[in-house]
Image (cartoon, rainbow, N blue to C red; front, side, top):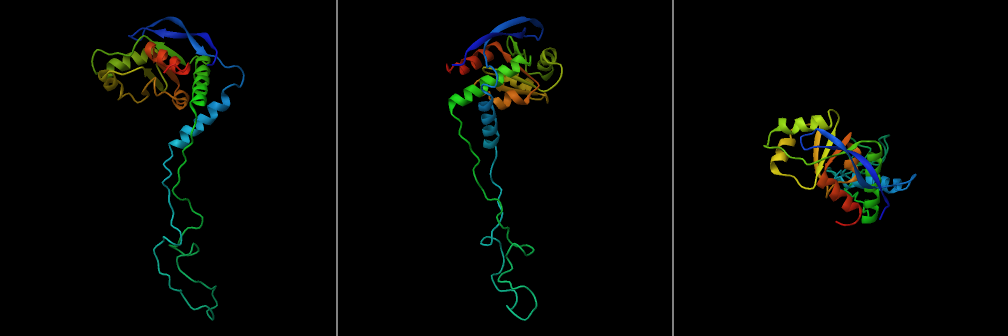
Length: 215
């Protein structure tokens, strides 16, 4: 388990008003520790999103006749055995890409180290905050947008909770700059893509439990 230090985060009430600062036990990393794990996990996550469905036709799969296009000698042209070769229009592709899997496996220990390093960096830069809870009285976009506008007036924002009520999800889904996630599936790519990350109290508690191996 990575050693944790008490770090102060901005804390907001449920209505988005700023209350004070609170201390949380964020895993601490010195120097370059954890950076290599962070890099490998980021590359793996992006590689695992690749479909790998690109395909080109080889000589054996391209449609065409196998008949010799013209006689071997006497024409003054280079000899040809088929019209499906890559040198011909509508012919095959030489050494073209074929379907393949790009999946990379990353073990749990490395994932945890990378997630901890990503969280530590964002907290150190002052780009992580905590809200009492994400909740709206009814499924209205304007209600959720009003809260978000107080917490993070501009930029792309990631809002995180331990679980989401249907009404809150409906209220948040139409705000273009806001993305919703839950603490159990949060990864380093999520932490890297947004200008600001705002977690609920239960959300950051669950995330820290994950980093401590308690999930």
